[in-house]
Length: 500
Image 1: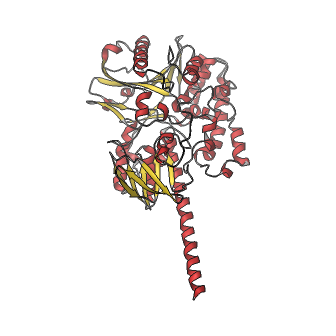
Image 2: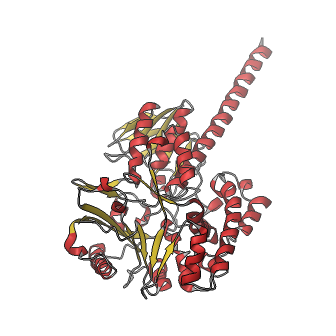
């Protein structure tokens, strides 16, 4: 079957590789000059740093799917982070998160006495919920109403406490507000408000302990070299600088893609892009409104020297975290004192910068809004955050910066991200699990979709799992159509015999 993949993000490439291994003729169409989508590098001379994702979660899932896609994972070096990261509060308290549960118990006993047993209950309960949630909500699609309107799925949602929000759920385990924040901030990884995102996403913080946090040597975007090599080996054709402007449909099927002034016939198509934006390629469908995730202002820097005394991953939280989240998600205004995340990969990877130099990446969560002047907002935020970093131990940082690049939600919009949100659509209850766009989102069953806005959701390994769901749905659809053809041929043969 001739398959067109529109977009070369990680979901599109993995989908294409899985289908190519099943013998299909796959061509990937990418509008940019390079592949990867959000998985890319920011480069400046001999410096490079990941543009988007930095924290590698669910490493076993990631490696397993890469292997299924035909990639030699023996060539990929994973560096385990332990301690995982530091969470810094404005009063000077630093909470260190460890992969090891025993070390974490002692850290909580020291910093938040009285909450140690609550932590053990949290780990036990989340372990049980992960066992329920993985097959039900990560490894399954909800393509028909009966797939989710059944006793098993509804029972699972109840057991996962989906009716609670993350911060409300954490109050059942931790008395200290700071500790609740330290286990709730992870919803920001996928652009969600911890005060309204369903409690099922508490599993992210649990997973950091259970499965660990890792770094890919050379940067997360170094996966693209392995993906391109696998595409070449498996006959997946990649056409860069080739934007698709429309997916034509007729008779309940996608029939052609439009490339500039020409059309190409297809038998199936996979849309890989931020779905609310990319879905408009199917012109006959009225665009649906979604709630976007939060945006971010990103700072990428080349720095003289290194900050080896700082962990690779660090979170700096403002004094009023709930007020910070309210500004971002409800008031839609720039926080006066933002919380932020710092990525310091040069601590373990000398290949990212010239000798004696390093790179830093700062992510500042912000609202998505058309009414914000992002030039002045990004200047305000970058100056404030750099000053704060110097106060927090990044000595002479501003003097040591040799170059800096800033990316805002305005840039994200220009790159095709819905409303400037950095993480796909928001992980709200009405946009999670069965309520999120699925891998066959249209009536035309030969149109598939994959990406952060498609079930099962955002994050590189989860999007890759979505690619697996695409391949499974494709196989089922292909089987159904083959059976229909066989029945039709059989009926034609029978009709011919009767007419003799």
